[in-house]
Structures are given as structure tokens and as C-alpha cells.
Length: 306
Image: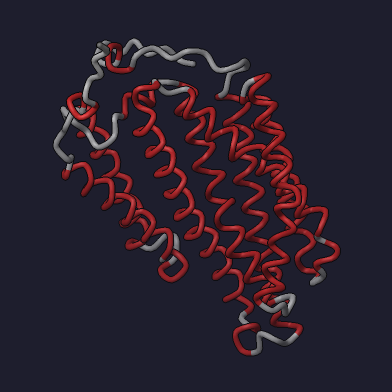
């Protein structure tokens, strides 16, 4: 007779880390709130600096508390795995651009190009002409050669693509932007999937669920910061001209908004250049190797860099 153990008996119940939950939520909220309101208050305003610094300090306290908590919300010792830390930094900055671009591209299409909402959707769809095939190809390249090469190339291509895209925005012609949008999409396609997969693979298998949650939290936080920072750039640039506020359909208003978008997409190119530097310096060549048991090595600090 074959005996099958009851899966319920193997469940290990742990208390909810309410202290950690409150701290991480407060830290993210305050920092994003500060970035978001910098356009109104100004970057050197005490309220802006206070919110951002306070938010980051709370996140630092959260990290220290988690390292001393028996059942932490997030096991931060996993960041001792070098590749996991680097991949999450890349995903943070890439998410600042990846999520934000759909919002800003839609605004540009409707305000500067005078497209309808459905036409704006088609404008954004151009991005996926480059993104989809690059994402599929990037996964195959990562399986054969590791993540570094494909992520580095993707960041470089995305940097070029977003810069070229930004230069075409004041021309008010979507036809002249296609190739730049496709290049930007291809670059992002080579980054997002491989970086997420490699970060997950670099973690101990028994913590896969927790690791996935960490990666998604990093991406969502990066997206929120990206929307706040890039939105501030747009507001400050367009508020200085301000003509589109009075008559958005006029040529001067459309051009003013387009130049504001040029600054936003140039900032996106700079952010992707940061991803390129992080990837080329922080990642190591080669295919994924096995990671030791986190539980048995974390206490002694024996997790080697990968």
C-alpha cells in the first residue's frame, strides 16, 4: 500500500508581519507623494524634500527591521545574491519607462496629433511591433547564453530608440516616428522578460513565491516613481509655455505639448542608459547556476555572489 502524505500537514503557518507591512506602505507612499507633488511645490521645496527623504528613511527602517524579524514580510537576505539585486535594479528603472510610456504616448497622440482614443491605441500598438518579437527572441538568447548579453543589448537599443523617438515628437507626424518607436519597443522587449525570468531563477527554489512578490513590488514601485517624475517634467515644461492650456487644438498649443513630451522621452532615454550601465557593470556572463539553500546560509552570510 502506498501512503501519500496530506499536503495540509506540511503547511507552515507564520504570523503576518503587520509592522513591516505598515512601514513599507508608508515609505513607498511618502516617497511617491513627494515626487508627484514636486511639480507643484518645486524640487527644492521643504515639503518635496521632506516627503521624499522621509519616505526613503522609512524604507531604510523597514529594511533594518525585516532583518531582525523572525517571520519578515520580505526576506531581504535574498538580495545578497548579486544577480538578484542587479536584476531588480534594472527592473526598477525599466519599469519607470515601460509603464509610463503608454500613458504619455496616449496623451501625445490625442493632444499633439489630434488622434481619437482609438487612433491613440493604434499609435501605441506600433511599440509592440518591436516589443513582441524581441521579447520572444530575448528569452531564447537568455536560455543559451545567459541574461547579461541580451539585457545589455536591450538597454542600449532602448536608449537609442527612445532618444530618436523624442527627437521626432515635435514634427507632429506619426509616420515619421514608426521606426523609432519600433526600435524602442525592441529594446524593451529584450529587457523586461529576460530580466524578470533571470531574477526569479537566481533565487532559491523554495522561496519562488516570495521572490515573485518582491519582483512585482519593485516593478510597481518603479512604475509609480516613473509616472510621478516624468509627469513632473511634462508639467514644468508645458506650464512654462502654457499655450496648450488655453487652446489645446491650436498649432502653438500642440507644439508646446509636443516639446514637453520631447523632454519626457529624452528622460526615458536617460533612464534606459542607466539600465545599460547597471547591466554591463553588475551582471556576470554565463548561464544560470544553482543557488544554495537560502535558509541554511543566510544566518552565516554565506550566500555567494552570482
